[in-house]
Image (tube, rainbow, N blue to C red):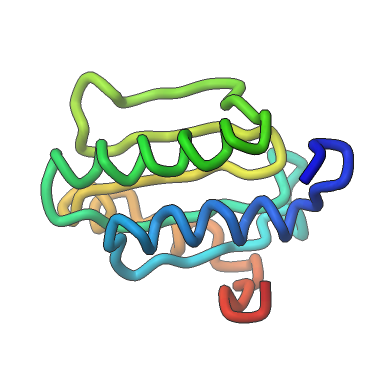
Length: 120
């Protein structure tokens, strides 16, 4: 798949599959593009340990690199309790359980709709 031909939904599917491969939990895709110009989608998932947080983020990066896409920014690799990968149209948030509950991004973006992962 060439970069010019990939859609945001296809990117979301690749990212979702990479998360699933590393057993991310409670993964959601929020269409924040409806309520903000920040990006189109937030993809949020939970990992059960710092090691799994890093493994999920690494898996997403690896799969996106195969498509020729590198993140514009990466945050949190030092702590491995919340890693953010910024792919311009999609921001991927990989949380440990405690930080996902604390930051509660789903509540913050409650006016945005959810995308059915199975429909991608």
